[in-house]
Length: 235
Image (tube, rainbow, N blue to C red; front, side):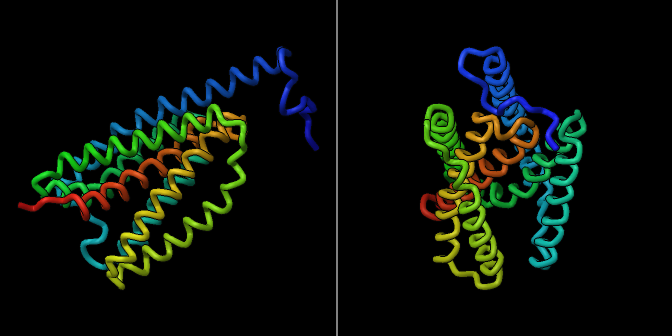
């Protein structure tokens, strides 16, 4: 039984509509701020990982994958459990540091190229451009894209299974296909997640930031991987 009988969408010009719009804007603003802040521990984690040679996959790839998933889902559970408190924010920042560590192997590989720093900046700029486009569309478009979520999740499962299989198959063509599809799918996830906040479907900025961060992270890593393959210079 629902105790709140107020309609989800208030009439235009009503006090409820003003409050509802202000709440959505506050969640969206806090999401952007926390997303920007999350880049700091990510960069720090990547730096630490490069300096220490950190890798979950240096030994047995399967064991490394299980360990990564266990840590990641532990963070997911904690962030959702404490999403309404400062603990949730702290766990989110801890998760982004962990993801920075996971990124360090790719960063170290690209930095080994003579133009590695330029490739990283290009990937960062491309990711920022994709995010800006998706954020703009989410804010101004009258079309509801949130229904794409279930199809995008199916697409994610397909590329996830393919990526796991390719750990052993080591097929370059499959890796390129996975990276290209991942960029498309996670770019669309950014649009869906941000529009959910804009439309009031997500009211917790910690959870919203987690979803958007994962998408941005995957766009960046796959874009950097493609740039490293096609634009890397080892001379």
